[in-house]
Image (cartoon, rainbow, N blue to C red; front, side, top):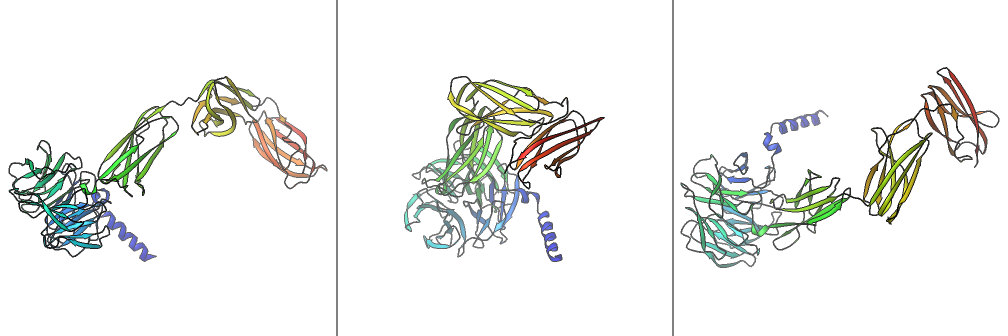
Length: 569
């Protein structure tokens, strides 16, 4: 036991010694990851705020990066020929694959196979579990690469003026994508429209899907553009200059700088860049929701189904979806996972009239789809009156309807003041009718006190709405002593006995057989003035005539009464 306690204390101390940001942080869509040498990657928010520095522990230059379906980050260590992995919380997990020769980039296909590009020659292909599959483009220098949506055509650079192409499925060299670029082709990324962005040393180039230069980007003083990646918004990109260690987010259409930060790591350190949720055409995820718009009566359940597919319209399993509800019934949020059919649902009951917007977000990419729900007042029954009368300890409820649609019936619910509601009965409805219908219900033998009542009108499809009695019911103190005939009578084996006390005092309720022998004491003790009901069981008695007797004393009064009852088995 002492050893276990010691280990628990050590674990608590170890956890509590971690930085707060490490305990709480998780990769968020738009977060920027910058390879800054020394085996490290800076994890920053889109505004440049440093979350923490991830370190693979091997030193050297960190270059290519990519995210898998679980949002884990893979980092190629160019200097030490390893690929580090970090989970979505930034915690280092086991290295991925082996057999590299100066790996500079990593790319996933739609089945989450990984292609690791090596300057020492070709791609090493691994399955999603890190098992080696094959070598592709053996003997070909690979610096940076990106896979086209066809899952076959890989674009790659060699730090020259050319972007090459390779069929990685059939392992065949293809004609170059672009030549004569006049710089040093480093990192590149394919856009969803087929265009390519390329960090080309002195500038960043935008090329058409045919490989022609259509736009040039630059910032004064930056002459060593090396790292590059697309922002999840699809309208901007990130690029970094390894000479200045400046990182920029740039609008694709205008070329304007949106934001910038410096890594603070000095000259010649920044050689890799990734963005959580970055757009990669080979692993695109698309989300749709249904129904896009619907109308429901309030107090019913509504479900929205999200479907996630890839660029080939293949349903995607185990994709995390974050749901957010805003509107008259919000805020509300939850998280679900897609199944093998690529689908997952969010369901809720709307209690308020008006509009809701339901937003489904793919956590790993930030892609969203929205649905709108209109909740309308549910009036399948038009209630024209709901009244009550009190008769001793009974409450008589009466109500009338002028129109009913699919009315299954009414549950009658009662509560003590500020208490919980309890179902005390049910009255069958009249389905669908335009005629006036009258209903009644009697709630019998109530104790003294104050009560509220309401009707729960229920449709055949399970929808319901409430109608509250406008007045409060009070069962008062009786005017005289009374002991009522038990009911039912005759009985087997149980019966109820009612009695009334106009004053506070002590009571004894006893049962005797026909010879006058005491067979049971049903109640005994102090009672305040009011109406009471006790249960009596004759399960252990034989058939015959018995007598029950109430004795009261207190508040200057005495009362005794005996009644006869019959057990019939």
